[in-house]
Image (cartoon, rainbow over all chains, first blue to last red; front, side, top):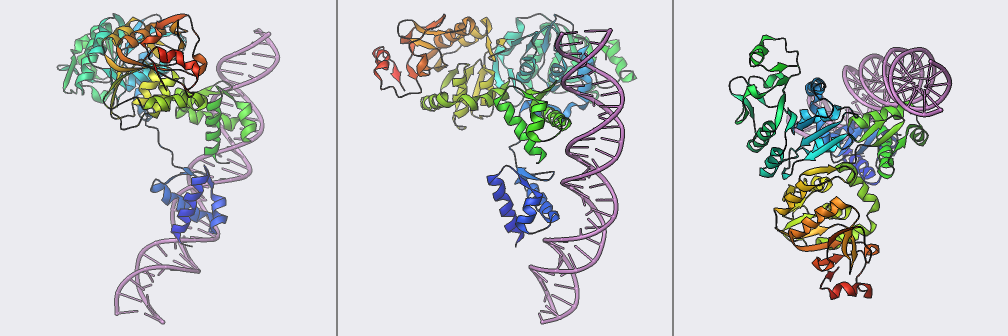
Length: 249
Length: 249
DNA sequence: TTAGTATTTGCAATAATTTGCAACAAATGT
DNA sequence: ACATTTGTTGCAAATTATTGCAAATACTAA
């Protein structure tokens, strides 16, 4: 029997059933389990099925949703989220920026913390929906498809209506001279308004973003009350921000 | 049994029920509770469900959950969605109400149809995110947790800014004398504005809602351009609406 | 054909994963 | 505070994967 025949049979099986076992295929095809394993591996490499322990399953149309994207880059950001959490106090009004860092904070938020959250991020609103004591105010506007936040004048006007205690500003570039900058014009516009509407601004930044700058200006560095990073801010690298009166964590 | 099979079964259960117990799954899958626990943990890491003490629940009543729920109560509403689809034309500006009926329409929408959609419903926005040619304008406001729509003055003001071609009005009660009515005050307020901002109003209604009324007034019956129901509108029961100049489908 | 080469296949040894159990920790309810 | 239920961790047994290798098979070119 040709290898291609076996391939065809394996794929046919997966057309009918939701799974195939190594053992079944081994007897069905009259080859050793090792061979079946190799076949499955080859088919999996072509993306025609998914190899799993003990057999194979049809290749699932992968999750491309924002919620699933979270888990892939949460090493540093998880640390940041943990640290940032301590600054959120009961009954505060908090603006959540739309980045993944702010999202992780939302995910880590204790269920019993009473907050008013203002955001333009679907994922964050979706996460906070589970928090009984969190009031969510969502900014309307044009939906930006890839990052799942609303932007545009409507969003900006929405944020202008508030005076929040804290703004959690997602990862931007921070440069002591050039200030806080971002890679997208419209998102930066919105961020600027978020900042204007908040008493304190807590920036969430991975250390590699410190000292760098991007195309679109958000606010002067001095406007930040605090920078939360994934490293311990003992380094002299951070002194420049301390001199500006910015706390570090 | 493959681990993937167990995963599938667990997720299926959560599609039907709002919860699964460790013990139940343990006997159902013929594995120890420890294994079920580990499975649930793995699925939770992938964001496919939420691990809770004693079992698991669907990850969140967010976009994903909404979509899953659709599958199980789509008998009548699926029919309505199919019928309503034909009235949506390329390049129109359409206001989508937040109900499950409108959601089904969003789901049935051809991927290549170019539309501008204005909505206050998270699930609908989430579904339409995948439609490359659909521009989504989302109404800000206070997030209503159970139905996942925004309401309040902000949402109302947002809708007032537009002049849409069509408003797809989710299931309300329709009574030839008492007009269109709904069960929730704030949602009805929003619906009213949606209608004001639209040239035509297409009401989606299961037949049992016809001739009934609820507490909160939305609009006079004559304001409707069309009523889409799950039955064939040959019955004389529908004549009263025809006399008001309302099309039926 | 025939020798030479590459590929495929099965086998065996070894590595990795999964699973259930048991002891202990944490949480929940009364 | 206590008893009960649920969760966690470490571990050993079972199952499955991987790797190296030799025999079998197919392919190529004189």
